[in-house]
Image (cartoon, rainbow, N blue to C red):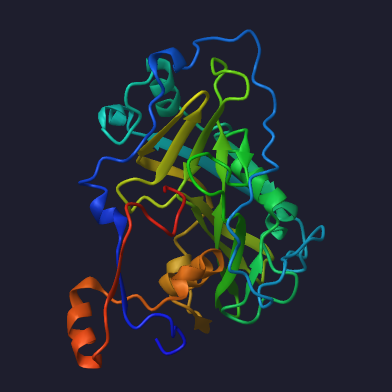
Length: 337
């Protein structure tokens, strides 16, 4: 904790605990401001240029990734069929954290999504844009993903992904997607990545200039590459499901409405994962450590050495240091808050 001179001792009470007990805040429009049921034409494109996102914590040691046509790791054509899944508990509309006091069609809209394309075949050109510009040798090497290409993957889930996080009710961003080389062996490469995105889900019945956003906490992904065959052995890009709420939903017209929900499954998956567990890696990072490094590229506060709540009093007494307690009503390291 020496390099964090501004903090003597810090601990963090994560909102994932409190959110079970605290009703989320939302702004409820008056009856006269309720969203109209139907419009003769679709809403026009939104002007989002004035929304300045939270800055990334990306340093010069995280370069841009591959921007060419086909990465050298793929010496020959390769294809992989990827399936899309989007499973939602339709009964959670009764949850107090979900939209309250809205028209039934709005509630049904946000609970009724299905995948845009159930299966799609991706080529070496698609997967190349998820890789670094240079060699894949050094475990821990990180790089920025090509967001335009990542957007192409997300369109399999919904036709309108946005790689800029602009939903109202919070500061936009941080935007981006980053990959890390987690493990290497003579025959395989294991790459993890994290992507921030949301979906423009404006229904036809909202007013002109109105907005509706579906904001997943984040997307975490993994690619296992067969180096000898020059193919993608397995691929996965998924919304984490280990928290009580993993999606923030917003609709804004003359007022703003915010809701929180849990999606049971939202992922793209392809290839065989049976072999991945049997690979003997010559060098590797634990997945938790690799994902933690990716998270720090998005959020500078993750560099703070947080002290677990149950240990803070003893550590403070031993070091004769004061306690700075931070309590937040929301998860700070994903897009649900």
